[in-house]
Image (cartoon, rainbow, N blue to C red):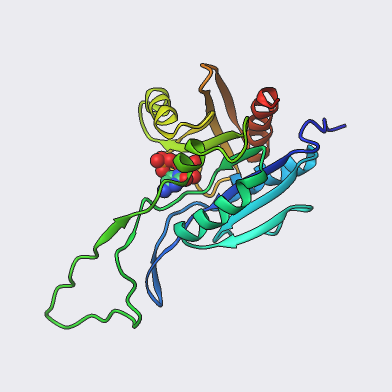
Amino acid sequence: DLAQDLAGRHVVVSAGGTREPLDPVRFLGNRSSGKQGYALAATAAARGARVTLLSANAELPDPAGVEVVRVSTALQLRDAALKAVVDADVVVMAAAVADFRPAEYVTGKIKKVDGVDPAPVALVRNPDILAEISAHRARPGQLVVGFAAETDDVLANGRAKLARKGCDLLVVNEVGDSKAFGLDTNAAVVLAADGAEVHIPDGPKENLADAVWDQVAARLR
Ligand code: C5P
């Protein structure tokens, strides 16, 4: 029997990785598969939540009973997120969002010219969606959860990022070499603004998802 401890709650989860178009055939992207975010959406639905999944370029089947909103760029994810969080009890930003996007979109395919080096691609900063949602809670008591991939000083960097983003929980993955991206397993530390630190051993992404919902459910009022 699964505890229905998220029954009556609306949770918003972002998943996948944004793509920032450069021209009609090219984009700046990342290696996020979306598996962790989809596992979060599926497990939240199994625990009774109404789930809105903001899916950025993930090639995965829709989880049962979940409303899926498809987006591609960071700006589209921001628009969809700001709409979805209005009545959300919990927001989990598991998507890998591009920090920068090309300053301009070139409408025709960029061509190479013999003997001419390309001009550098100018980039501009994308808004930090997690920080924005954390700073302007759409309803009192709304819980905001971020994800972070760190290669070194995982705990210290995680604590600093938790404070910087202003969220309630930060799920920190150690990445590098072959860890986490595209795999079916994940190990992580959940850092809480209330000081808690919960270590989740390497295991299926569904296990990490359930451990995150345990931490969320304990803090919902
Ligand atoms: O700063 P960093 O990219 O490491 O933070 C990761 C967390 O912040 C993730 O939860 C990600 O979804 C979120 N993020 C965001 N908007 C950005 C960059 C990251 O919401 N522009």
